[in-house]
Length: 191
Length: 162
Image (cartoon, rainbow over all chains, first blue to last red; front, side):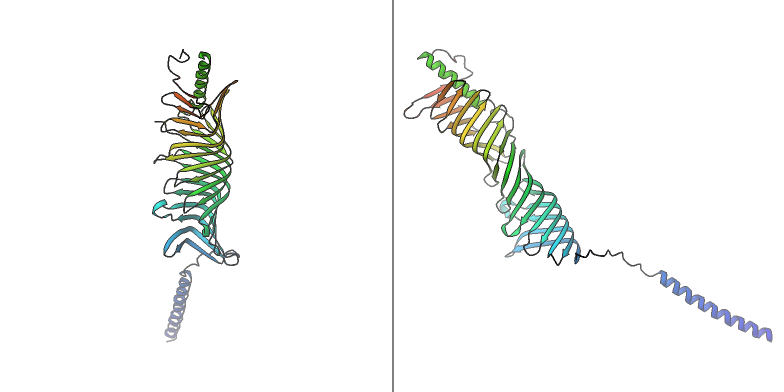
């Protein structure tokens, strides 16, 4: 009889221990099963909003003027400007001139003036085949004007134009090279 | 009279050589200037300020040079120089106030008191025109000068009696 009571106590204790083990196991597994936290990079102090695949379109009276796209955009509220990387600016020229596509490594978009300061491997290509390149180009949105104080190189077919300082009117495709100009025209044979 | 004509013919030959030989080639036209204005719609490039253009052995100096092109391949259609035009090749020199080269027609026209010099020899007229493909020059005099000449540089009668 005494032995029987001992067995009952032992079984009861075993049941309690087993229950505890089950609870502990469940708790442990639940803890391990928690989705790890995403490694969200803390934004620099001067950045208020960071966006991937940024895209902005400027229209006037329902007509698209230009598109600004970037791989990444960081907005600084204090300075009211957006820093962009992997930039593509497309200025619409209508049926007459076609689009002008300008790419650059980086850019700063000034929200107040809507100007875009492009830096690093700035390359512009028009639908007519005119191509220009510079290290820095600033797009003045209100005047539809691209300006640069650096050396700028144009090419159009076999012809090449180069100079320091540029003013490129995107709506008429007229441009000026301000100083130190050199050009090469590869002439066709006279007929 | 014969001697004068021979001198005139020689000078015209020199003028032809100075104006024609380098431009008729396929060599690229190279231009340097202070500034440039280009119009893609009109297909013109206007060089201003100390303009120097080279093609082959020829060098052209002027105040303003307008290069025009047309067609899909941007073929040069006209090269026009304005103000203090000076064309050099070796010791030969041509000057004038205005010059036009039409590559399609193969014609160079120099006016604005044009003058061609070779050494101490000088020839002047109202207009000097050189036809590249035909290898002949025409010098047209003004109302007072009445000078006009046509020569064939490659011809066997060059320098012969008139």
